[in-house]
View 1 (cartoon, rainbow, N blue to C red):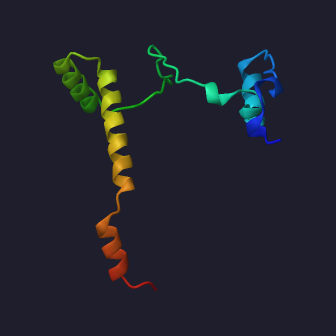
View 2 (view 1 turned 90 degrees about the horizontal axis):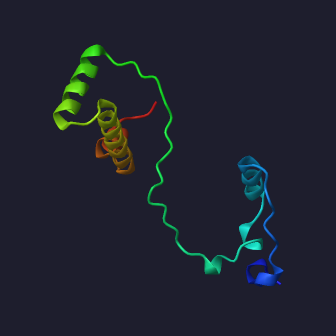
View 3 (view 1 turned 135 degrees about the horizontal axis):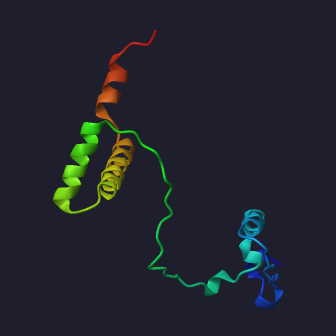
Length: 115
């Protein structure tokens, strides 16, 4: 009998875990289809879930920080929040740019002889 066709009564019981780390290690090495009937799964919503953050130390030139604070003040937002928005926009733009072929790079590599 194929694993995918296991009936509910034939599924293994999900073990009880003492810690999240123990549970994570278990699921990294076991197939969930042996324990869960995914045909009955539904999409869950977690509207108040906030992404985890990490605190970093970032040294900025004083004039740049002053300009950032001025811009944030004009928008009536905290300067750190504005900085996160700017960083997120730039990272997205860089990902988009990297995904598109660069016509100049192709033309340069074709027109140049390799030694």
